[in-house]
Length: 449
Image (tube, rainbow, N blue to C red; front, side, top):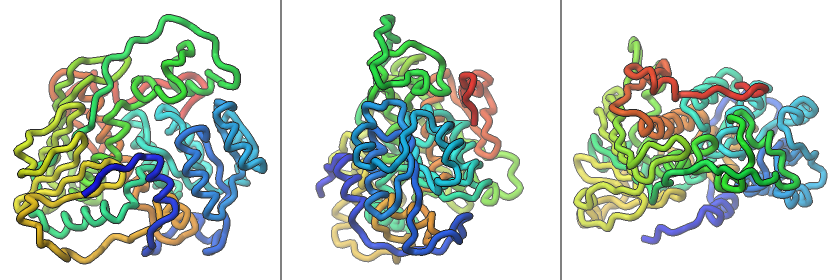
């Protein structure tokens, strides 16, 4: 079984392949569209990752009406491809001037500006497709989920592997009891970030880059090429490190297959005053500017209805014991669920190929539970169709929000000593005032959610 596929080639492939089954959904703006309608889409952050999704949306026959990026040089190519789209550097001005002309918004900025842009769009009734991780902080992820629900807009987090048939089948197999009862899970990432040292030099800001807008809600600091255009992910002020960046891919099977989203749903916990998950981290170092070189975090997840409690261990650079692989070669990346009848393992963080373990026991395995999840053309196509009232998204913020919260709680746990106890219903840390202060951070003046 071959696992290799890079992110760019997968994005291109996923926009054009597959077949769809749909589930009806009530969308706030569904009445405005029919199957052949074109959405008017605005892009915020169009010089990098967002370019691929915008191309996909356009190739589906939709209109790109506005393109916003704080770096006019990097955005130049897509502006040339779509000269009819109005150009902006500040999304707030774009909304002020074009609110009535926009149906839906793509947000593909650095992590630290996802929330301010996406929440501004949703509060204006716009559907939102936001790149992963959904937010930079735990609190922002909760606000994104709550805002989407309040305004009844269609949302999708950009973990494109969620549209893959193999990921959906892996989830169905676990739901169907193929590997039995799951009480243990492991997620590991192919490397760490290493300590970061803030630069002391102050080179000039490149022509075409609005540094103040790039900083957005983050603390003020001088421009440096160590942050932009693509190296911001390793810096705590702007990115989420390797755990935050990839958990929405790598932990995707685990989160869905174990129904962990239920821990955030009051309806699934009737009468409960709190639902507590416990995290204990062992980082290689505590880095105020960046993220640990290596990391191990044990997460104790309570029962979800009839499903038993689960002990999940996440690793950056480190890996779980090889013996857990039941004779299968452990890869550099992994999502492993250990069940009472066997295990399921995926080592591809994007397109979620999987194998049932031990291989000999499952070598003649066929069939399994009937398909219960829709199969779709692509992650982007699924969002577009849902915006028109046709079906629903698989990574809406009701799912992407809690998954992001969990990833950012792992990052948070690495900053404090001892375990932390987090109540998913209230969004509060119950046993550490210092850890509670890390759930969010103060925004610069002029920025809010």
